Image 1 (cartoon, rainbow, N blue to C red):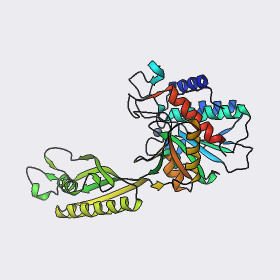
Image 2 (image 1 turned 135 degrees about the horizontal axis):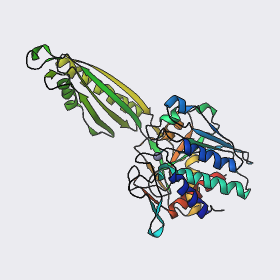
Image 3 (image 1 turned 60 degrees about the vertical axis):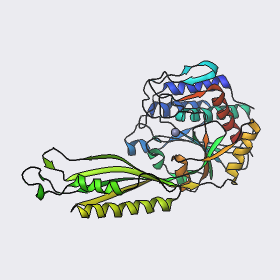
Image 4 (image 1 turned 60 degrees about the horizontal axis):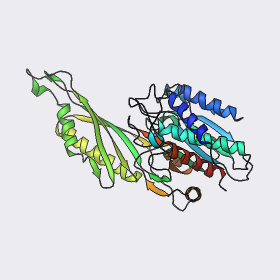
Length: 370
Ligand SMILES: [Zn+2]
């Protein structure tokens, strides 16, 4: 049993033609709902839209199965990064699929959504017995997975997940992903006239600069640290009383990420005190590290499915977060599967007919696996 290639390509083209920037996935959500309804399935949207100020919630669908096995979760995200408005699929030589060059293609993650929907359609039309399946199409994944964070994970029955959201050749899958801590530091000093009474002032920018100069950036052991934005001051004749900067820390070890954050806090407090300023450091844990055991059945099933399709398996780590981090946090063991997308987050994003077909057949194999 294999997917219908021309139906898959038409579906992908249609998905690409729908604008679905993060927080603006309304039309995409409605399209997927309708597509599932055509298969006799009812999808349920949660209330994430109201909570996030977006136009669409996360979309969930339960597919009953005849096999007396626990359900499997298949997931992808409905939103795309910008520039994403007016996307159009352009067919190139050798089955190459790109955007017109002025937007992203949106294969991240619409190639994943297409693969899951086409696999399901093929499966249901075949009448083959299969496991119960759960589908979850999340909203607003790109901005640190804020959509799925609103999801009621306790309502999911599956304990194993395949998240179709990884770049590179189909056959690849990530079993490990990091903790990502983002932070904002606000240095407070005292404003004074820079010409008349600079000695009255406490220079917040200088305090922040002193701290930044002492914070290691880039690769720090196996972690990464980035200071990303900085702002402060009001006018050239005023000693600045405020300076803030933002950044992030990533590590495969949650403990190490937190340790680096505390080290950073000490450095900032020392630098602030040396300048007579004060600092407030706030951090958000965007996602928590996980490592799925490579001998886990969720990995074994993936390897078997790739083997059956003649796809070389490539298990890897990723230093990016995905919805799978949040599944892992809630006790669902999963991997992030390559779904026919390349050069993501750029107008040079591309996929190919062949790869799309592989991704959909992979989804189908996983859905029918014992
Ligand atoms: Zn993605």
